[in-house]
Image (cartoon, rainbow, N blue to C red; front, side, top):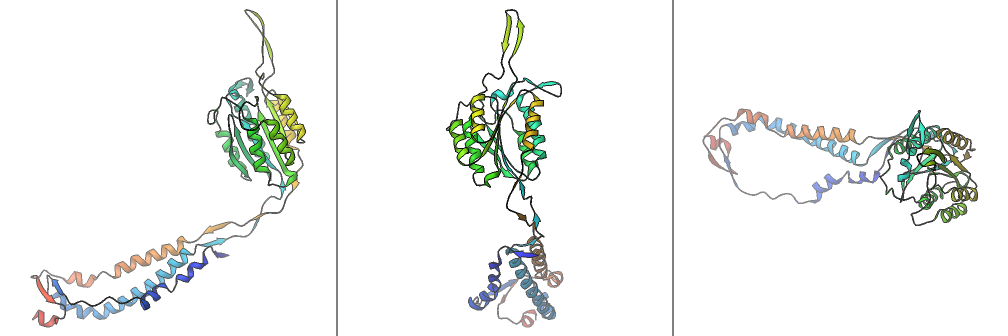
Amino acid sequence: MIQFLWPWVFVLLPLPWLCHALLPRAANRDASLFVPFFKSMSRIESVAPKVGARNRLIAVLAIFAWLLLVLAASRPQWVGDPVQLPTTGRDLMLAVDISGSMEAQDIQLNGQNATRLQVVKSVVGDFVERRTGDRLGLILFAARAYTQAPLTFDRDTVQTLLVEAEIGIIEENATAIGDAIGLGVKHLRERPEASRILILLTDGVNNAGEVTPVQAGDLAMRERIKIYTIGIGADASTTNSLFGPRTINPSADLDEDTLTRIAVNTGGRYFRARDREELEEIYEILDQLEPVEQEAETFRPTSALFFYPLGVAMAFSFLIALLRIPWGILFSIRREPRGVVPADANLAEVEA
């Protein structure tokens, strides 16, 4: 069906008639007419009937052009049939750490060492693709936390924004885990209670931000938001060197105690991802969360139609401009001596 977004615009339809009826007419002024020809002017009388018919056609075109302009200004649009949106699913906010430590290459991807962020993009991208029916949002955090994508059914956009995330787009020298949780709570607190889920992935310890992770976790607990935390990074390993055995722990900064406390207090779980396989298993577990019924939502696709009447009105205006050009008189004009003709002079007498 067709709907008008601004139907009140139709009150402007009688505006040209009101202007014609109410505004004073221009006063006639006596003046002399300077023309470079005299004989050709007499031919105006022979084309006068045609000029009258042409003026009537111009008036009709002008009326239709005005009607079409008002119709375009009312913003007509075609409203399609209702489309049922998914009524089951969860509201998932993904909070991903992109601090400088995520550049560590202690996890393999496709048989080669890769940064932690590259592995996260690979696994979480597949996870996002599988979340048909869920609302997904994306938070990126380092020294600060930012909303990269609010809750949406558009999984492709969320996945694209995740792939485009790079270390350095946010101050990378610190990690604000508490702020990321707080921002997730802000987005989820208005959603249905049983479907509020925040999945937070980090490889470090909170050392920036306005809110501590424990405080943010307590706020999430009061808002009944379930938090699943994931700590990523390889385990400690021992290597032989010139000075003897040497222990390297790439995940020394990972605060597992705090992440576990936040997850347990909010009814979620803490997961440890030491490699790509473990990270995939974690997201497969998260895939098994039971969907929660939500209120049914419908969407009616709309298409703007204003450009159709606007285009026809412009065509009519162009035709009016062409009709106003006195083609017959212009083609019959020949060069004559310049003279002065009074405004009330008889053209026949002037020609004589």
